[in-house]
Length: 307
Length: 307
Image 1 (tube, each protein chain N blue to C red):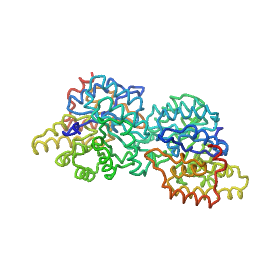
Image 2 (cartoon, rainbow over the protein chains, first blue to last red):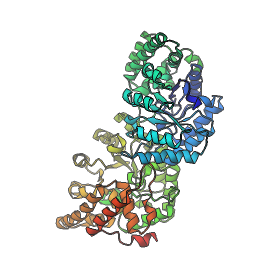
Image 3 (cartoon, rainbow over the protein chains, first blue to last red):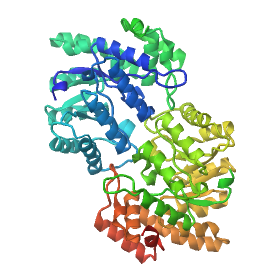
Image 4 (spheres, rainbow over the protein chains, first blue to last red):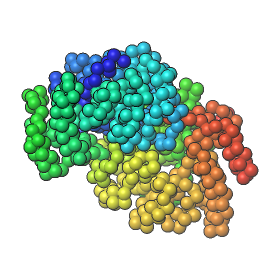
């Protein structure tokens, strides 16, 4: 659990595409470098990475390229969940062998109304198949996308069966009552809210930091919040990051993040998304960026990193 | 559209697993032979096939094995939709090159609240990438699993753009008003309800038959209904098939179908499911089978086919 003992911020890294909609690996690596330089870990292949629009082969190849490019695997927390058990096993094994800090695992999300027994079976099969004492699994609770919630009873059962392996959860439900209940019920379990706007409430209860969409655009400010030594300093940081978070989350998240990166990187290629997503409307995007600039927002040195 | 001009029944073929949860190809081929012998086409890789629990590589290999085993590709309507566009392209191209009657395409189902523009983009990218005049695509509307409904406006747009390619839809919503509205709005478009219990209402409106879970267990009876020459004969068939359908759909569908096949094939291996599904409770299953037997249900020659 040591990788998650100190509160950290992870960005579910947005994925750039070339004009033929293939993954733009060079831009991705450059952006990963910028993010780590700003103090963020890399939750590659998250929801905001359009990971579920990437083929298995693309996810494998991309992880390899990021590591080959010299990014420290200890910074990596890739998404490895998949509807198909063999694919979840393959991705999780690949992440573990690459030396990643952990694997963030969606439940299988096609079939609905599945039982905790069935979900336990899925996670257990993956863990047993990978069969490594070094594997660290974080569960991923995002019922608004999966339709498959991760219950506290399931968490309890997984921790009991695999105490060294199942070490945390990302709670993307946006339901603070759920986050708080997990923090209280599972001390030592790495609970990551999915928004930096929840950190001032979550950190005193032992949260492990956050894995947040908007960590793609304000990693430095979130890292500063995590380092804040006094409640006053934390409150100041919180005011800043929460204002930005709220402005962005009022928009379609992934297209908006890509517009923001494109703007501050001076690089229009970043706006591309894969179907079924569509780009954010240009006028709406310009208004959002004006709003962010008026709030004093910037992404320092991003244009240089991507040049 | 000729492949769908005469009403047909397709079974979303249930997928047998070995005790290590790998696909049991021999059992699958034997069951496909039995189904076609009973008058059903084969909608391999449907929801009831646990297709979304199968890896891309498994789906490719299985289709190859079924065709190599001598099953006529004209009988095949495999599911080829996937969350990731490159995988949907690969599966659809593979099905087209194998000579399948068509490809049944789920929308990408992870991201929610996506626009018709985004879904049109997904289907258009697949169709353009496959780039074959022989490709026939059927859309797959099953919002209770995908959370991504296929609107009539989207259908209209796809038909207008690809009139020779986008030739039909499976409506698994269970919402008769939706099925009826599509039948009336899109004459000549092959609309398949997902239950044989809807056929007597759907056929007079021009339905293309049905693609039904329970076609796995009563293909012959559904085929008889489709052949019925008079309203009286059809009503008789309907009473039979609907009674069985209703009894089975009151249970967890996939585990129940597998229990029924296992029973009538005298082959307990058929009960296995992949996580996140779990096997149907044995007592509950025995009660269901007693109920079916009391209704006069059987699966003729299945034990021989699987021997």
